Amino acid sequence: MVRFTVLASGSKGNCAVVSGGRTRILVDAGLSCRELFRRMKLAGEEPETLDAIVITHEHQDHVNGLAVTARKLGIPVYLTEATHRAWMRWLMPRRHMTYAQWLELCRKQAAERQAELDSATQSPDSAEADPEEAEADGTTSPAGDGAAPPADAAMSGASIDSASWATAGRPPTLREDPTWLPAVEYFQAGQPFTIGDIGLSPFTIPHDAADPVGFVLSAEGVRMGFVTDLGYITPNVKQQLRNLDLLLLESNHDLEMLRDGPYPWAVKQRVLSRVGHLSNEAASEFLSTAYDGQARYVILAHLSENNNLPELARVAAERALLGRPSLMANRLVLAEQHRPLASVIF
Ligand SMILES: [Zn+2]
Ligand SMILES: [Zn+2]
Image 1: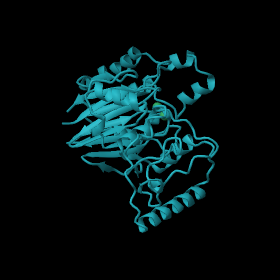
Image 2: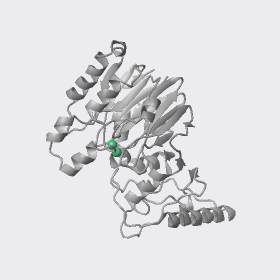
Image 3: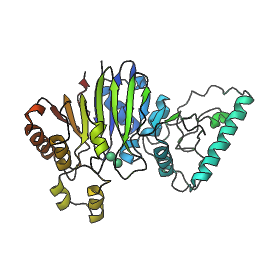
Image 4: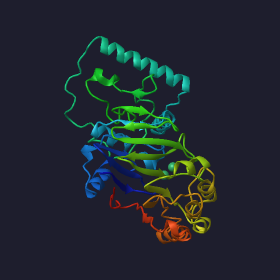
């Protein structure tokens, strides 16, 4: 059985659970850990059964609960190297580091780890007090004045196993190192990979982040397209979104509402730009022209609370689908910010 559950979608937090075979993954962790767990339970999912977290890009509404959730569950985080670095910079804005310095740091830490392994020091029982409990749940306050120790990273580029804190006999607390994760795995856009029984095919999207991606996820022969936070639909994105059983597509704003709305001019320009967000009109245009109509479910996502209304998004998409009678079998669903959607089950 394949299950696809949107826990939250919108500029205040994005998060979805995809399960297939024996594997269960989280796509983005934009809610606080506590809220994320609460919504998973509401949706009938057990947080403890999650195998990994996959991140589309480093914007706060996609990573807000990342560190706490990954630490609490002790699971790996999959993201691109550029997204990882951007996320670390966001958490430690005062730590100015060139790429060369960062590489040097990685080299040093890899050597330290090797030295630890060589001296065969066993790390004592480190699983008692939860170091996160004292921290505000899901808040990711930047570290002060370079007092926080450096993030840990391996040179292989494929995997980071942050263990240099083993000398202290425990992982660092959030305060000591807000960027510490139990394990990090890098992927690259255009290079499919698997996590257990789930296949992931990441592709580049145009958005103002370091290295943003969308995904086609597949499990048990079911293909699910996942694309939000994009300024426009590139030819490659169109290509990727074919032969899907489920399509989750951004329908961020109504153009008129955005133009007449409360945002400052610069923010409006950013949203409207080629690396901003997809409007209802652009989503509808895609659905009425390039979309192949294969998906049984179309989920409209990342709706703006200020510059959109669910009914406007729905009507725009419905108009596109109605214009093509072959697409009327598509079930149109709107993802919500404040509560999980009923799971789509295949
Ligand atoms: Zn977003
Ligand atoms: Zn974004």
